[in-house]
Image (cartoon, rainbow, N blue to C red; front, side, top):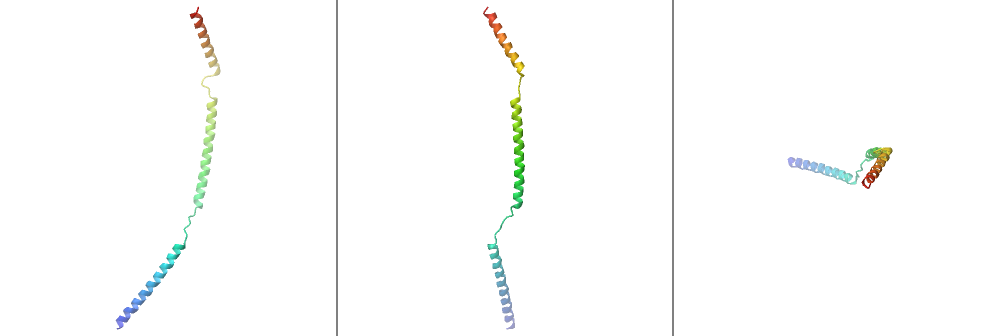
Length: 104
């Protein structure tokens, strides 16, 4: 009979420990279900802000380059003005001389 009593006492202890474990797991499960996970975005916000500042400076430098390039293109002349005037005068003189000699 003592063996049977020992086994029942052991089973009772095991059941009691099992119930304690289940209760702890239930408490942990409740904590997990009620806990809200929130991401810390402060670091990412700082990185994004610095990236935005860099992009703004790049955009400004590109706009300055574009305006400078456009000014240079507007001011660029392939031929000097005097050369164009001399060429037009030569063409007019050639056409006039040719027509004079042809119709003479």
